[in-house]
Image 1 (tube, rainbow, N blue to C red):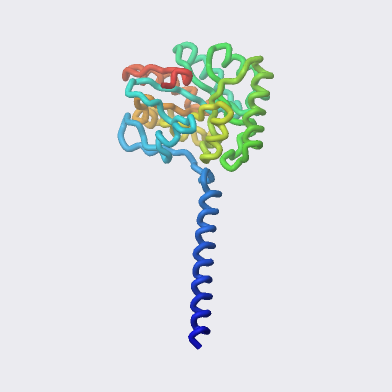
Image 2 (image 1 turned 90 degrees about the vertical axis):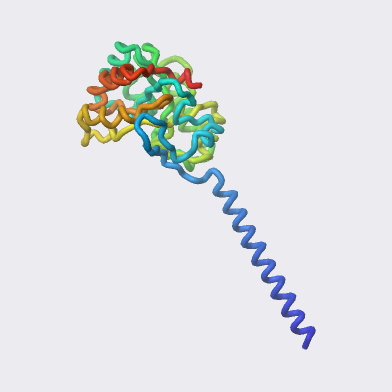
Length: 263
């Protein structure tokens, strides 16, 4: 009888041990598959006027992937960027204002924009503006493997060379601001800096454009030293308020710099 209970006891111990091992295996497996798999929908939280906001990933964490949402500086410098997935009739006016004011800017374009607006793209380059990579087809790239990610990036590069005859600058902005650790690493391995933003407002809805004054009232408190500003060139309001926005920033002592001057 004692031998019987002893065998039962040993069997139970073995089963418990196997159960623990299995659970540890599952935890380890899940940990491995989830590393870099968390999808981040980029956003910032404004807590004080004219102060650097808090991002939903830290500045230190992002820098290991050559990713920036602000410049590491206390100087009153700003970096102006535009996202342009398609043309809505306002980009030429925006370019005119930037050239007149001698303000540098970066335009993150899609492959579709390159295909459909080659003359505007050529003007951007001729006028000294940076054209950044916003992907070929503007998909969610956060879950892509390296091959598919590279296809999006290199498809854009090929079209850019076709249109401009020059090599594309190595700046990337994730479509819709959605990324994962893996996608940031993919971009870094292709030689890119990923550029997010610290100052933006709801300007992308063409059917719900704010007034110029409303846009200025929203954006001016969000300007801060080292801000990377995101605007959309598809916005009618932006084309109307840009000159005032630049002047108000300069009146506060800010200067505009190129992404090539990021510290």
